Image (cartoon, rainbow, N blue to C red):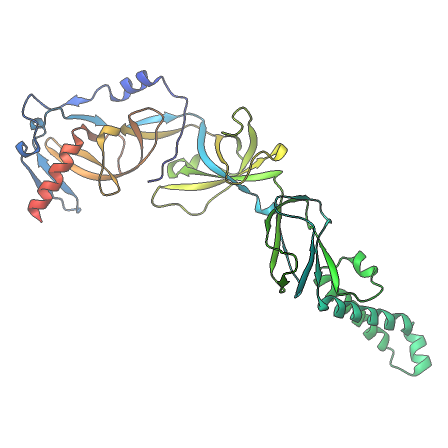
Length: 383
């Protein structure tokens, strides 16, 4: 099960634990400590729950603790991973079918916007440029609508049609990736053209190979800038009300432990992970010096209002069948085996309850493993 490490500034551990769990009530008396000596049976409740009836005093060393609610400070911490801000990523694709003649950059190179990246040979360029030159020549020879109509007896709309042909030729060249300056500079039709970097950044993906054949729509390069990055961090469901877009945050990494990166909460995920009861925060973080790299782990600290958490001793939890369970005391000599979702806690020997238990409920803190064995034993007898 996925857990999230968290650190909070709370009371000293010894004082905190004595306040919370110092009142554990021992139930056992001196006696033989064997599972077979304790007689247990199942009782089915109307709601579908199963309670186990057992004389708890017959289990030596058994004690009971209460599920406690403790205050969380005004700092919410979460662990996340650095990723590119996809608004600062640009993908270069081929707009024609042809052959790659020359490539001037490789992966991880830094490029400037407008820099020549690669040269493509394609008859599509020559055809489009020839159409443009012909349309431009016709437009320049036709003169004004009045002159054309008077000289040749042509309809006055013929000049407009010629202009439309030129505009269509210009639009076709623009769709092939030529800039207005490129189109203005065309003097003759050529089959080769340079593709330029659309943004300044780093070449993060390179699929282009010199001499390779390409088709329209093939991806050639991906460029990205790291001046700003995202950190996707996981928070628990019950912390969601403490977080909103625009909150200030700080991020620290193992690579730069003495450096703090500033940012804000950009948005929260609309989907919740039902297995871990967590959801993701997207944090927008400034990255001076481009020190934060994609896939790097980071811890974020969000300034927020205080909250609360439920905690129990880890001794009250039993890991069985890929899940955690706790035995909740429902009566003087009855217990319920209940599935519990947990998260890590900063005090050694204790766990944070994400779901399954409520504040004030009493759980078996010691000998839970013995109760679990009895639970399976009576189930075997009743099946």
